[in-house]
Image (cartoon, rainbow, N blue to C red; front, side, top):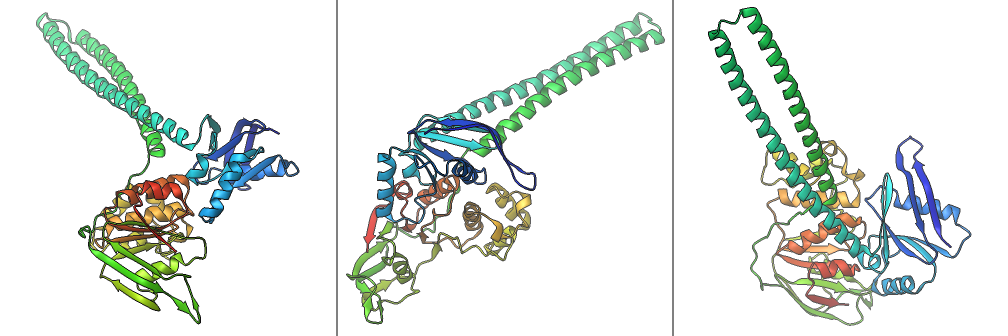
Length: 427
């Protein structure tokens, strides 16, 4: 069974338009992913289709189906997607899942654009678009400079001609009244040309502004976490036959042994409930070992969980940034850094509790750029669970570029691959 939408709109009760007059069709048996920025209405669209097709089991609608699944459960989901004969429309931020679907639809407030390939294909098309926009921007900026220079040259030439003509007419004895009329006519002509040139320059400037805004919306925000300067290879943690005992029961069936050296990129693996987060508490000295031998060196760490609970929801965005301002930057510099991390003036007084997962992640990275207390170890516990795909790409880039030690718990295979995991601790 197919899905067809013609001039479909959704308006909130307060009159705000979520999407307007969108059109698309999905043929029977197609498997399609629906992507778009957070808040654009992907889940709402699924609910609309679900309400219409509620008694049609040939159509499967999936909204973030891989969230909170461990690796084994994700594999079962991927197999179902690949082998199912149903018509499937899914919303997901799981790159591995999106790459298993052969068609990608991008939802925006005014349209649905269909890409004939998986998410990797969609991203390549987006990159080509950004490159084209940069080329177009360079052409427009060059055109603007040429227009402005032409205007200056013409103004200078007119001034010389008018001065020369005025001198010649004065020498020839032209009456003052006639000379005044000639002057008025010349000024009117100059004003007309000036208005035309100004209008042309303004039109080009408007085009440049629009192109820059589109590039900012499409291009990935690249944020880097500063290097702590800890030399590579220093022993940070040594564990030999370590376990945690609760009452009469050991947390792990087999005691764990491992080494962590500065510069390692480690993934802790295991099924849900295996005790991965408990192992992190052991490494950070929050939980003592019950058995075995454990050495932990002195190091600075930053522990980021999936809720980004390091962000204080009681503070405003600006107050949160100031909390990390141990370098005592002046207020205008802190606000400049917030703006650079896509927090405009409208955000500064907003409570952190109102931010999305992606916004909290960007605020954390911004706060790290303000702070002088750079971590030796970055600990990430399911950091991508509550992020939209654009925010996930920002975090992936920042983590990949970080020069320190990384310890990550994640069932997101694409994230783990991109950040360069080179060591595993299995429990």
